[in-house]
Image 1 (spheres, rainbow, N blue to C red):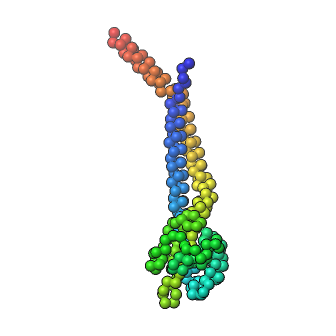
Image 2 (image 1 turned 90 degrees about the horizontal axis):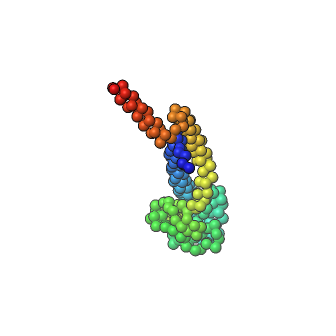
Image 3 (image 1 turned 60 degrees about the vertical axis):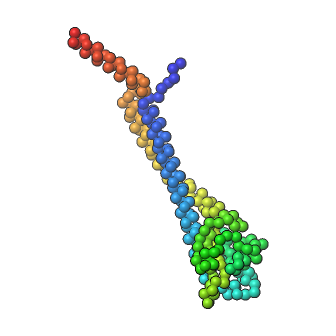
Length: 227
């Protein structure tokens, strides 16, 4: 049994559907990538602002000069962490000794990650892996009244938390892509429907045979007329 061929209109619709779907998917993927990049940038700005605020607190500077900085800094850091929605607020000595941490067992242990720019007096942001996993973090120096660095503040948001926030935005992104795909598919269907009426649903092979038939007829008529 001969295999049924697609009509020209059907082939055009299929091609348009594939192209439009790929374009919409590419656009959605690009939007997700941009949203992810924007989320990381926003997280960097957020943690830097919180770290600078903590580092500028007179209570933090005063606590760093006491014999037991953790007694004051741990509750202060935890209240700040919860209020700002960040994942950790760590106040440490210049030698990396932590005076605060969301996990109390980590207090007194060395901070994990780069701090050299902050020790040189330059606040900075980076992405690093610590005890809570990979995080976007800021490290800011704490100065005393003589502008000496007496401590450091690191504030971070884990990349897992950033990605979870992004996932909550995906329905909005795909909610925009879905109508665009539906509109493009409707337009392609209407175009193929019009073409099907004009070609009477014929496929390429049928159109070729019809052309060859009428071309032969015209040539035959032309030869007869010359006789």
